[in-house]
Image (cartoon, rainbow, N blue to C red; front, side):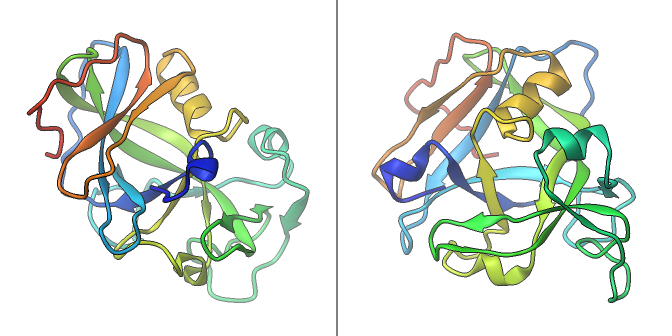
Length: 215
């Protein structure tokens, strides 16, 4: 989801779509597969994550939970601030006694105040060679930030995903939620007409020519 190599290890643009249904499986996944495309206008790399309950557009969700100030999650995220009272109507991004974070948009080099929250996500499992079932995890941590931070991102993109090794980094969260290794691999292409992938979890990572991971 980024257009520059030096920032590729930290950010990938995150396009949130909600077309897939959550399929639960009794087998623990060994890895996860994310389809990646390159946006022609911005040259940013874009992937898809299904989020919220139900998995539909909008912010009415029964699984959205603000991270409280002083909680273990807040402390481990290295947050140095707390929103004690929100003066606007309570909503995602505006809650009382909530852990505060300062998300950053690397494309416009701007940061703004955000609220740390937890949500359910639906991810596509893989055995390393073929796409598998979608499985869900609750309590995945993310920043709910002002829409002004979407400036400079590809059309319909709703945020960025951090690939660092910190406590709230995406690889760490998947490793904790699904007991998979905290590692990932990226197969990107300079072409805007071909699909590529990211793998999170255990190897081997195999992506055969013609394999469709876009659905």
